[in-house]
Image (cartoon, rainbow, N blue to C red):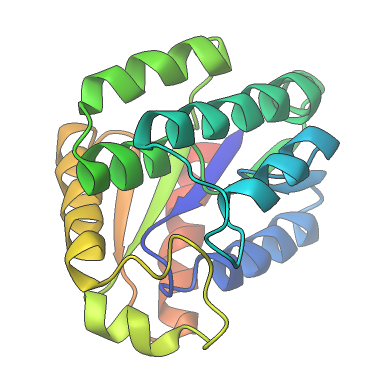
Length: 202
C-alpha cells in the first residue's frame, strides 16, 4: 500500500501524515515514512536546490519540474517500490500530484505533460490513495512561519492557482484523491483519513 498527503503549504500535511503513521503502526503494520522531494541522499540534495532560502540560483519552470522528477525517480527506485514489494505501507509527504499543481497550474505548464513525465519517472507507480488537505489560501498562509522557502514566497495569486489545480485534478481523479477540509480540527481530519484507509486496507 502507498498513501500520499498533499495540498498547499500550511494545510497540515505533515501533522496528519505523522498521526496516520502512528495509527498504522498500532495496527501492526510496518510503515515507511518519506517525503518528496527528499528521503534519499540524492533527493535531499535536490530538495536543497529547489527549496533554497535564498534566490541565488536561477531555475526555469521546466528545469524546476525536471529536478523534482529526478528526486522522485530516485525515491521510487530506492525506497517506495522496494517497500511496497516487501508488503510494507509507504506514507509520503507529497508525490506527483504536487508537481501537477505547483508547476503546471502554478507556473502555466501543461498538466498532462507533467503526468506523462511523472509516469516515466515513477515507472507508472501510483499511490493507493492521496489525501488532499484543502484550505483557503489566506488561512494557510497564516500558518506558515516567517522562515519561508523559495516556493512559499511566490505570493497569494500563485498559491490560489495551485489550490485550484489541486481541486481540479481531484475532481478528475476522484477514485484515487480524497479531498479533506483542512479548516477542521486535527482530530476530525484524522478520523476521516483513518476511515478511508481502513476500507482500503481491508
